[in-house]
Length: 546
Image (tube, rainbow, N blue to C red):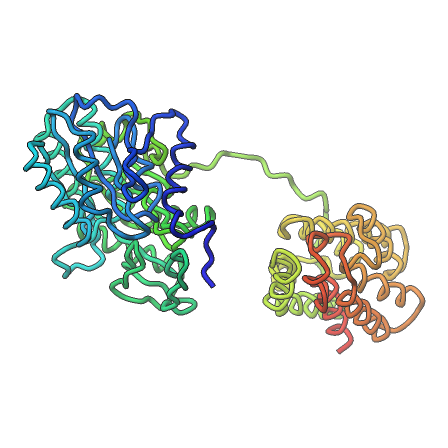
């Protein structure tokens, strides 16, 4: 089944255009009243006294192209159906309605449909007496042997540079010349992990899990090669190397990092870091993004664009505009850390050895590390999918201290307090804080002379106090409390482990959760699934019994 937010596919583009018109803060956009089949978004403040700039193409690349209509950029955008070029008639109507004596420049991405439809419309307009010129954006370097390179994200830069020249009142030949010079200085390459969801259609699943496709087109066209990796560093190295090879010798560049629609902000931040750690960074002086300028619906991918800089380009790119889709240019500056004073540990201890305690610590931590993927998968069904990673992060921290002989193994109260302190620093979310409360409170009780089971039970009581969980709430408490109760009663570790197992099993039958992320889920989502925290307790105690 296709996954796309819409009412009726046939009305999708027209209704989306209405949304664009409604969302401009300058109230400066209109749609030409030419019927549902011709979709032309224009500046409402246009008086035809300057060179008109017209671009467009298939919809699905938003904010391109309607998002670039406004003062300082495009005069009009002609919108086709999803990934389909607008008709000759639509382009011709756009030309006729916005072009005055100064003429107009068509900025076209280099695809067959766009070349033909915009080109024929230009010829028809000339026959009607209009001054029309056309430039073709062909910035894609992914297919070096292709005699017709595609136009991709670099198109937005051409809109901006040409738009500045037109806004300054420059004549048509000067606007065209500047646009062509910018086109010749623009180089882009894209990569995707998966194609996009086209409305009403099944997604093309040709890219296998764990792979990526270099040079995938903005309509999902096959790229130049499939890479057997999704590693950020490897991919960034491949792409920046290719860009460095085409950037003219001795030229500095602006870098545009463009989201094709499906990359998260976290991934884009990492991408930015990787690219700016590459050798190419030495030639980058200005940045744009990461941002979505020319998308491919929800394609899980991105593109990188270099513009070999000239002073007129920078002046144009920095000029103010009144458009929805543009993002500012900024200077590239390396990372500088702010000096800071780290809060020192309140614990004063000397590392010590204890073989029996070391064996327990090793077994507990390794069990949690080994469970990482299984716990994440379990948590993905009833939570946010990170329980395994959270527990494993804490376990690795403690295990590293064990391996480096930096733990007070012969001083159990201090060991528990140190465990609590370190878990709070490395385990994300509420889990780390709750575990820290448990171990810190237990360490305090041990210091006061309590036995270990009683101390741990006290720690659990404080965890419940602050966390709000009780038995029956479908949390790790359901496994940990019966296990500790057995130990406090003098039962063996095996009996305690069995109590934990039964408690964890019971969570799979509980109709609802009263604490944690699972509290937001219904019974159908929880039915038959053990609580991940309770399952972790079960497996740790089982490992200690072996």
